[in-house]
Each structure stands twice: as C-alpha cells, then as structure tokens.
Image 1 (cartoon, rainbow, N blue to C red):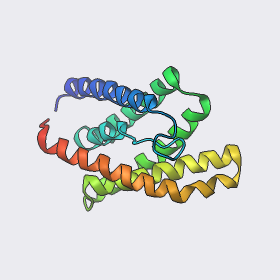
Image 2: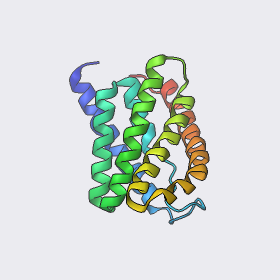
Image 3: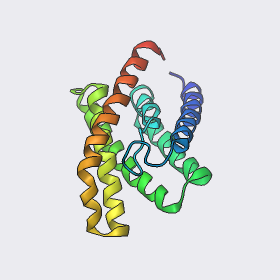
Length: 162
C-alpha cells in the first residue's frame, strides 16, 4: 500500500476511534454495573491498523485517540489511566500478533485484560494498593469485551480489503 493511502486510512481510523470513544463517553456511568468500565470499541480500529498498516501507524492512531479524548471529554487522571492501559495492551497485542499463533479474538481478549492491568497499576499509583482489589472484576470484563471486539475485528478483516 502506498504511504499516502496509509496516511489517509490512518486519519479515517483516528476519526472513527474518536467517534467510538465519544459514544462510549455518552453511556451512563456504571452502565455496565462496574464504574469506569467501557467496551473499548476504539481498540477495534487500533488493532485493524496494526494488522493492516503496521504497529507504527497503529501507535500513532492510538496516541491521537487518547489525546483527543482527553482534550474533549476527559480529565488528566483519565488520560493517565487510558495511556497506561493502552501502552500495556498495545505491547501485548503487538507481541501476540508477531507470533502468528493467535486469532484476532485471542489478541483482543488478552489486550483487554492487559489494558485493565495497566489501568490498575496507574490507579494504584494514585490511590494506593487497594486499587488491586478491583482487578478480578476488570480481568473478567477485559477478556469479555476484548473477545467481543476481536470477533468484530475478525469479521471486518474478512470483509474489508485493503
């Protein structure tokens, strides 16, 4: 794929990430019975970019998503949590994809779990070690939401030819 097409697709995926993040922001707090829990739909775009464009483009899209979300509807603390989770999940997803032994569902499910680990580590830095008590519920949620996002990603990758 030509670099100009990659850049244009990156812009589209960044915009879609922002829209998906905004839609999640509009959901009522605790709408999933766990405060702060989200579906992580924007990660579908990030993983799509990682598979189709490469990790450097996916990292740029992910960074832009975090920055835009923080500027438009977040707080500094939320941005730190988001970045911590995104960095850890991105690294884990990249390593799993590189092995070529995992499906998008497995990659995304593990990424969801790692995202929550990253957020809990950041929360523990702000709130103390008691934040780790929230981890079991977040691990389950991260695996379920990540698996769902991975299934959506797998279906998209079959349909969208780039």
